[in-house]
Length: 285
Image (tube, rainbow, N blue to C red; front, side, top):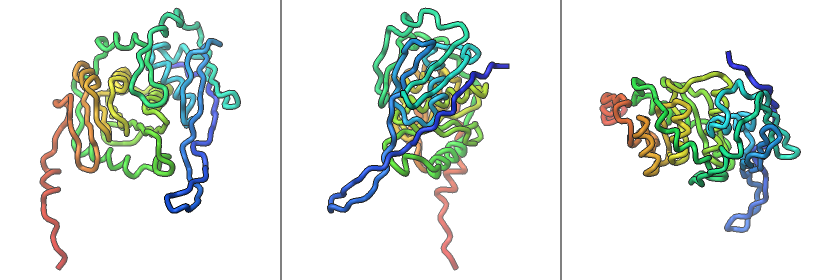
């Protein structure tokens, strides 16, 4: 059984109220998303500063360490303590991280919003990722996921300017929904939550409102998730990585529309759904 680290439960306001004046000179209070720095210290050594909404800082920190492959097992983490009075999080490991400076020296600047860099060694690990070959997803579950996201209460609906990520079961059950100023933070937070619960990704589906870049695809693959859905699209390198690891990418997921761009064999189409959509609606008597 995995060791669960000691965690703070640091809360932060997710929105900020400001005065706005519209094009007609009318004044009103408007909510905008919070954005704050969170400097990560590992065994008293400064690692990185993440710009975050602050919705799940402990999970974000754990997921960042996991997805950067700086910590291989949650058993290695003794505690994660967030202190918003100094905008910092202190991570204590059981045995330290060997060669931390060397392992974090090479960075790749990505297209992510906010803090968008990954440590270069991640690119070298793609060949070692093996996703479950027999995982399948039905068309009706894709529609259920898209509809769940559409009706989900969110900071975006109140204040805009954030990305949302969600983890679903392969039957369409919503497990986690996280918003942050950058989609990479939101995916890291979900990775941290999965780690804390000892949850695998082989029977999961990941949804993001943002585009599926190589960084997002690699992180999804590291989490063992065979399906990535996006309200937006993908990039050439994101598509290339997905094909390399055998991941299904579904882009432009809105309403009953999607584009299956990679991993075609994993999606189970259900023609009867299309027939139902095309069937004329009977007029009232």
